[in-house]
Length: 213
Image (cartoon, rainbow, N blue to C red):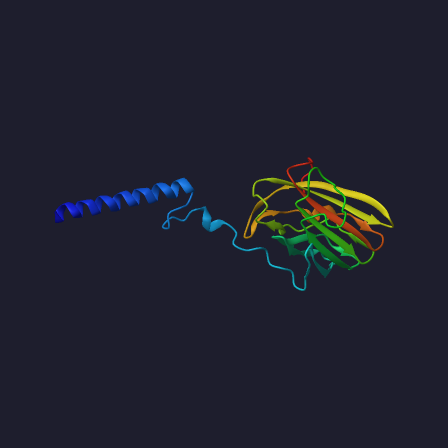
């Protein structure tokens, strides 16, 4: 009897191990000893900008455009954030950036479908942007899928006159906080703002234009 008990316990252990292995594969769970894709998933939202203000519908921050160009911090909201590289602005002026994931204040629908992200820019005075934008940076979020194309549209209102710029598309890459859409700031290349005004950049899923960012 003792020998039979040992055999039964050994069989029970083997069956239990087999069931655990089968369940792990069925549920898509990697065994604890494996280094699967789970460890590569983003675990946090992008960092907030220094001095950003948060509300229920949006987040905003005021920054200064450099004559040499640089990177504007995108206020973190709804899991979206990052930095936008922009060309030099002459003269240097202030800009308030406002991030949102919903059309909470009647912004125009510039693309097809619903935008996944809105970035409003309120520029304090007249300025002109150069034609060179440094690489790097981008809008990032776990909701952005790497390897998938996204389209960015822009619109500005100056002296009560509305004009559109863009659109352009970019294929998202992988980053620390999820997918990254680069080249958003290229929409500002060569643009002249004759006075204080407002603009909005809208991001849509899919490729809706043939022009790359």
